Amino acid sequence: MIAIRKITFRESIAAEVLNVTKQGLFLFLRIPALLFDLPMCSFVRKISENERKIIMGQLEAGDILLTSDKLFPAWELFAALLGSPNYSHASIYEGEESVVEATTFHSSGNGVVRTAAPLFLSGRKTVCVIRPAYRSNDDKNAALCWIRQQMGKPFDFCFNLEDDSTMYCSKLVAKAMNIAGFGVNIKKNFGREGHTPDAFLQMTDANIVYRKNETVIEKMMTYFSLTLAIFTLLAGLAPLWAICLALFGIGGLQLLMKM
Image (tube, rainbow, N blue to C red; front, side):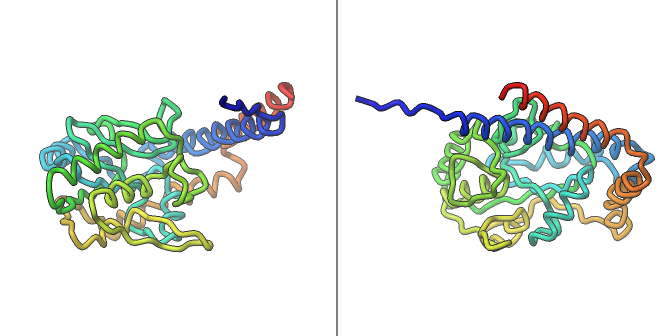
């Protein structure tokens, strides 16, 4: 006989708090990004249609896609502090113009999702395509099969390398590479081991298929929007940030009403 464990009141409240926190985090990061996407707020170039066609023309199933999204300079800085100064996101191209990634910004609310490659290759990003030297098609298919089985899993906000029930971007790709027989470097930050996007640049059995290096000016302009955000926040002229904070408060009130 299978015993059914009841969820306690405390556990239900904890789950609700986590859900509200995730929603608040999404809005806190996403809404200011809409502001930073305005030409007056960012001088970082967008991926052109020509560049997107060049990348799409070179992609093969099993390729690793590394990106650095300039709409999120604070996240770029955080990734750099963790030992990944070049790229802040990793994903895998599964073929048929589809990218599998672990992200916090998908409309479904899931962590591990599919994103159309043309959509993925848009915005103010720098892109690097890495092609692992798979020993056989069986190894490549094993990695792709495993990564498809992770679809729908929640995002790993704890960045726990040992817990396979949740995934963050580099962890998802690294474990797929492990399935295919590749080793991926592990870094230790704040006493916890994990993978970073730049670790895939150090893979010995892989080649860089596409990479467009940034100029010094482009790197400097990356943090223009972050500087603007800090300035407007300190000056008290940040209505979008105020909206985010208000939504945090509304979420908290809803939680209290449910209690």
